[in-house]
Every structure is written in C-alpha cells, then in structure tokens.
Image 1 (tube, rainbow, N blue to C red):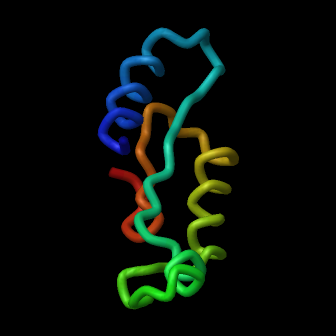
Image 2 (image 1 turned 90 degrees about the horizontal axis):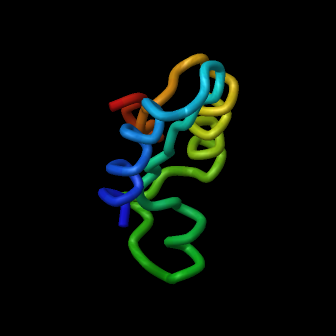
Image 3 (image 1 turned 90 degrees about the vertical axis):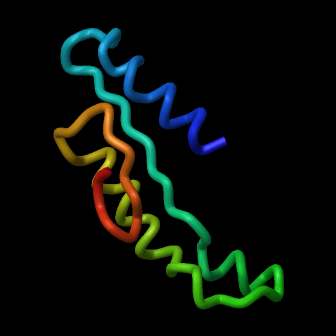
Length: 74
C-alpha cells in the first residue's frame, strides 16, 4: 500500500494548483501499536516521533515528498 501512496503523491503534486502541496508520511511501525499487539517493539518508533514527521509535512514548504519518520525525507 505504501508504494501506491508514494506513486500517487509525486505525480499529483505536478498537477496541483500553485501553492497547494501534497506529501506523505511513511512511519513504519509505531511502538505503541506494537505494544498493543504484544509484538517486539524494537523495530518501532514512538508515536511522538511519528507525529513530528506529520508536523514537518504540514508546516514545511516541501511538496511531493515522502517523509520517513526515521530518516527524514526520501
């Protein structure tokens, strides 16, 4: 599903009116979700860090970007 979203974001950004932006956040596993599912939490990242990626997506100036909550933009 992530590949589909990424494949959607980039070309749509080209078609949007000037000043309208689109980005996506690809957080991977969220630690609190893994805890709730009683799974190994090592691959997860805290929800607060994932939330910061969403904040960067909304408040930043970039468009057509996929924000990886761990590494930043890719």
